[in-house]
Length: 79
Image (cartoon, rainbow, N blue to C red):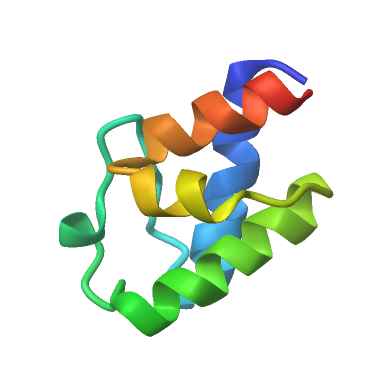
C-alpha cells in the first residue's frame, strides 16, 4: 500500500464517520478543519481507522497526533 492509498482510504473513513462525501484529508488536516470533529468524534474516528487498517494505536500515539499526516506516518510504519 502506497502513501497515496493510505490517504484515499482515510478519505473514505473520514467521509463515512462525518457523513460528508466532500471531505478529502491532507497531511495538514486537523480537527479545526472539519466542523463536527470534536473529542467524542475523535475516539470514533480513531477506532474506525484502526479497523480499516487492522491495527491499534497506542495511547501515546493518539495523544501525540497533531494532524492527519502524523496518523499516516504511524500507519505507514506499521505496514
